[in-house]
Image (cartoon, rainbow, N blue to C red; front, side, top):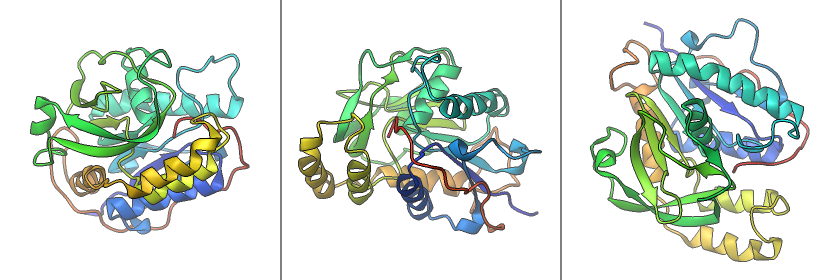
Length: 280
C-alpha cells in the first residue's frame, strides 16, 4: 500500500523564520522532505482539490497573530489563513485524524472546541520553562516514559484559559496551565515548541526582536539563556508523533505505530513577503 505524506501547514510571513521552522520539523521529526507536503498558508489558499484524505497526519506550526485578535482589525491575509485552518478542524476531529498543533495550534484547537483563548492570563515571554506531565500525560502514548518534568521553549502572547470540553490535559507549567492537550485519541496540541532547540529560538529572537515578545534590549540575554538550556525531551514528542502516525494502512481512531515513507516533493512553498509576526 502506498504511504501518504505528512502535511505541514505554516503561517509565518517571514521567509527565514518559516524556512527555519520547516527545517526544524524535518530534522527533529526525522522526516524526509519526500515524506512531506509543505504549504505556507499566508502565501495562498490551499490548492484546488485539497483533501485531508491524501495525508497521514497534519502538523501546524507557529503563526502570525493570535486567534483572539480582533477580527475587524486583523490583516486580511492572516484572517483568510486562520479561517481555512478552522474550516479543517471539524473533519480532523470527526475523523480523529492525527494532528499536532504547535503553539498557535493549541489556540486553534481550543478555539474550535469552544474554550476561551485570550491574552488575559498565562502568556509567556520567550524563555525556557519546566513543564510537568499530568497523570493522564504519563499514560499517553506520546509521553509515556518521559521524565515527569522537563524543559521546553515557549513564547506566546495568548493562551488557553480553560481546558476545552472533552479534551485531555497532558502537561502544564507554573506559568501556563495548558502546555499540552489531546482531543479524541489522535488530535494533539502543545503550547511549547516541540520542534525547537536553543539555536532555533536564538534565530527567532533575532528575527522577532522588534515584534513585542520581549524588550529588545533583552535579546542578547534571552539568546544566551536559550542556547545554554538543556532542552531535549520536546523533540522526542515530535519524533514519536511522526513514528506513530506518518504512514497509511492504519485507522485514525487507533494508536497504530508506523514508519514514514517517501513521496514526491512538497507543495505550496511559494515565498511570501515579510509581514507582522504573531505567535511564535
